[in-house]
Amino acid sequence: MGCGPSSLAVAELNRSLRAGDGSHLLQEKLQTSPWLLSAATPVLSRTAGTPLHTACKLKQLEVVKQMLCFLSSAPLPVVREALRPYCHRNDIALPMSNREGLGIAVEMVNCKGQTPLMCACAAGSPDLVKLLLAQGADPWVGDDCGSRKALHYAAMSGSTACIEALMQVIPERDRVRQGVRYINVRSVCGLTALHYAVSFNHVSAVEELLRHDPLLSAATSSHSYDVLVSCDALCTPLHFAAVRGNLVVVRMLLKQHLQGSSSSTGLRSREPRLRANDGGLLPWQIAAAYHPGNRDLVALLHPGEPLEVVMGLAGGGDEGAAASVRGVGTGPSSLAAIAAAALRTRLLSDLQRLREGPGPEPPGEEGDRSSFASSSPPPSSSSSPSSSSSSSPSSSSSASASCLLNQQQQPRGPRTREAPGPGGGGGSGGGITESGDEGGVGDVERLCGVCFSEQEAVAPAGCAHGVCGRCAERMCHLALGAKKPQPLLCAFCRTEVRGFVRVVGLIQQGRQ
Image (cartoon, rainbow, N blue to C red; front, side, top):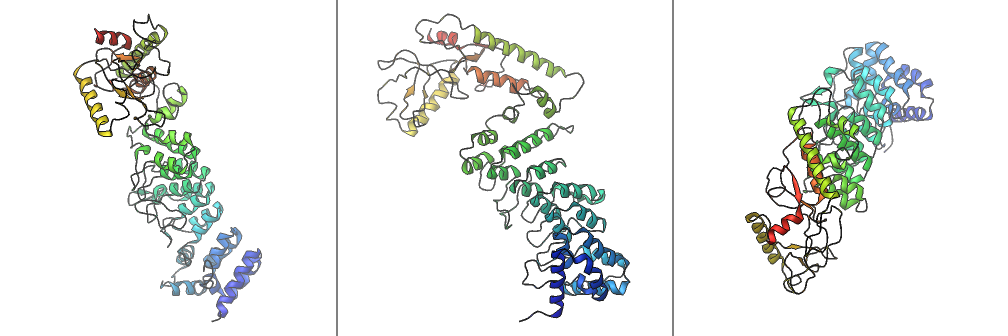
């Protein structure tokens, strides 16, 4: 099977375009054979597109201008002859005017459904993007490979200039269709331009897209069949960033969420770190699976700490950055904010006083329990030498439940906690009890019930549920230092905290 004369002529024109001398021959060829403008290359070709597609892929601005100028200035019969091959292939009526002919030309598709505008975005030519949009190219058209739009191709290529050109040149009336903003336009499986830019690790493209306030919570609607991007359903851009392990992009996305949640509207979207994909995986779990050695990435994505804290915008972070992110404006503060600030100052002063003045060591104690410094606990004691090693998971759960019940019934009684052993489990580490026995060496320090890593140091006055000093300070900052202060409540009994006392005194009261 051979190629006809028309296919050979188109192939020759495309070769001249790739060689860079097409602009010299194009005008002459179009005058003698106008049908070449919309004739397709052989189907066995990689693109099977028209010479207009080839010129856009090669970023030949002058050649594209010549083609469009030819269609706008040539007599209507010549324009109809130039577009006849394409109209015949796609069962489209021939144009009735030069303007209509230009509209058909800029919307011509190749065998993959790609328009010249998509080719220009993939090539990274903002000048071609502006030219084609000015001639009526529709940026909302999707290709045959997942319904990807021109903005998706610009994001995949990482062309910041093309993204900017699309968002600037598109008329205001065309930036929203059926309630969807163009920045959030999706492919057939729900991928947005932000998904593509994050997946291809184009940091500058992500930054440019974030300038236009995209939807960070946009989740894929199905498993992706895109040959360039594969993902599970319900994946957000943050899931993609976790797969790529790009800490810079993760910080950009989380900062954008903080800025959006503190906007003038007051609406706070759901925390992106708490969104699970179709497999039930959160972004931090994906990061831990793909990049187990990147502890900074996993810690940043883990929802155990408030976002303001991990971003360094709360507590001891940069106050100026915190103010900008939280949207703190000028003007007087509310009475609730003033009262919360006063209570926070007083509570932090109490904690500082307890830290600096540990007081005399009570009799029978082996160390100062009021110190905030993390120290290694003394050897654990148990009522039976083999009680810890022989306990089953069910017995451990029963013991924990009974301990919690005892804790709710009385302010501070004897309580047992499992201390993790060298391997991280609870079996070999032994039980940590407050009641001495023949196998122990005095009383054992109790661990903070919030972080389980440092010893108890202080407790809210009135409820006697001890926590470490670091957790107490964090509670003060997060509850009372937020944009909308909330009452500071005990992490266990939800009693409102009005002051802190030393744990040592409570232990002595319990023994009496």
